[in-house]
Length: 208
Image (cartoon, rainbow, N blue to C red; front, side, top):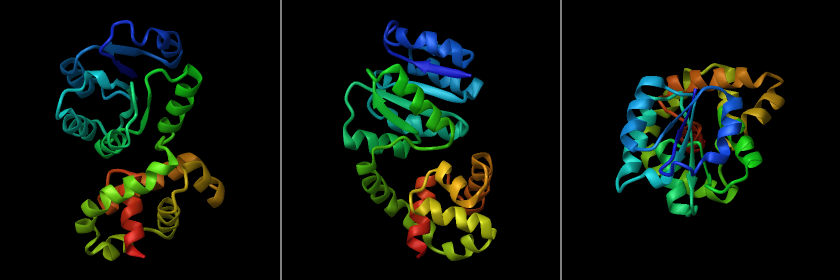
């Protein structure tokens, strides 16, 4: 199930043909309708037009995506500013791109996030990690004990995540499938008490 949240009735017209091929989709045009839709449907993918946002809405996005942990959110912005991108990733969005991105590029981005990746500019990664480091500091206390409960394979996956490797590269390096990598990450997140690979990478980096 895909959900498209757009402030403009015609704004995503050019995506409809592609969306129809991807599976059932629902369009919503208000943040209130989006909230109800996410809560009820728990969709796999959300294309979010940032023109729907009101002041303070980033906090609401974070809360919604915590309730819908299986939803991969892709934010579409008229302009992409670093501070906004970081805030969106902190809120749980998996990708940020311009609203006028080509259909081919959007397909590539969607494929990546559905595979468990973050679609993020390389230059933004250090700033994103720095932005969550302070938050992770408290969780890092006693992290040695947390990491001690990981299996040897989970430790190896964590080490590669801390290096910034993608699921595909991890799978290739360890000679396992990407699905197996995702299963390991799910188990690691549960054991360590984090919700995404960015926070896991920060904790792992602070541990060494």
